Length: 606
Image (cartoon, rainbow, N blue to C red):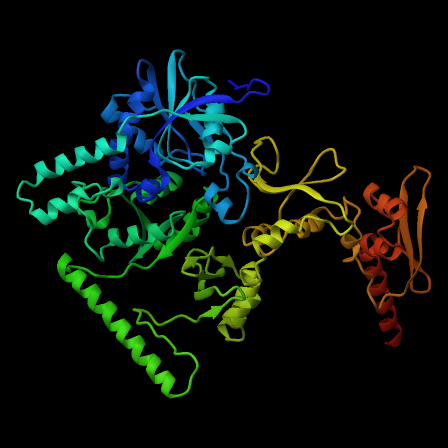
């Protein structure tokens, strides 16, 4: 069922929010990481809003999918809200993988350039009202895509928090309803529960409880021991919320909590429920030798993967662990201070800082952008011994392993190449200078003076196309009725996401010849040693324009058909020369003629 907007009129939809985003930011991050305590806390805060939206209606809770196209933590949130409100959950929406909106903002992209489309897995029964559920209402683009998929004018939205950006959406008016004293009421309830649960609470503790905010609500769930696997997971997830964390433990790779659910679904492996919360609420694991098989599947499922080596702090009581952490931090601080003083005594301008690690410190280098490359190394595939991979960590973030060229493997073994050389070859865009946001936004004029009206990168969603699922570049230049689209190379895709290129450079590289730009033909050059003359561009009896050339004294190439684009560039735009057309169409014939000539000379000498 499609949803059609009235002409020149925005669609009106009601939504309810617990609070402004800043007040619930910490809880929103816990929710997005899939932490069960955060999900339960958010559900308790949102229950009144959902009851208000569904009052007097036969309602169902519909979780909004994430950027992978599936509902994960939002479905768990709906289930928890349903326990409090008796409103059932209906996981109706599905979509295709798209670039996360926070990633778009980080790269100075407008949300309108990200195509978000959802479809119904099953229809919503007549007479039922859908209450969409998400963690935050920001730009409104995700919510509007979900509203269009539902196709009902009475569709409503419940979120934990909201910004003011949703008012800028040009397609829909999200109108906020008032849920009186929602936050204050919940804080009072939390305070009362805390008092009942701890009657022996001292006066200072009572004062601290009164000062609790919405994001610091006490939970019955036991916090993980500092230094435990679960605590390390929470710390890494806070810093890398968009990545799936894989811990290497012995002969296995393990994922925890929300990441475990994602890995289980993507790989079809079982979930484990550990009894000790220090080991996580959910765990999914696989043997280390299966990494080469499972890693590509996780990446194809749309996940970013970060591999971590957990710090071992077994059997340390919580109090002792805290003291150990404090002592370790103090020792490091004292060690650094002493090293700086020694360096100053020797007249050095900068002190060298050494950190103690369980493993030998890996070679490091710094990119032109000032980013640190750590733990760069090559490793052999356990499944295919002839295959080697090169990988590294950039600012602590694991990069995707790249298959190495056999020649590079031998050079690596013989220590003939350094990590800087390998980084430049396998992660070239990580080593290039990034353009500034100002440079990126301003470089929209082609070399012939035409303006780029629109340019964006999207993932092909039409399953009937051969390029389904591939990233494509779209561009529209002034004077064009329609835009142009082309599947992007890995090189261009990395350059785009790493921001080492500009719209003009991408458009000229991918569509330069179609736009009849002189810069697009500069790459075509005849071999300097080739004796090429009498380049002819003629029209045959069939009306086709062809190019041919004389090579050496007697040889002549076959006539090759010139495309309509190149013909226009030659005759009308005059942006390509005869020599450049000969280099483009006749290079193979010219090299063949030159090779035959050299063989003939060698035969005469013998």
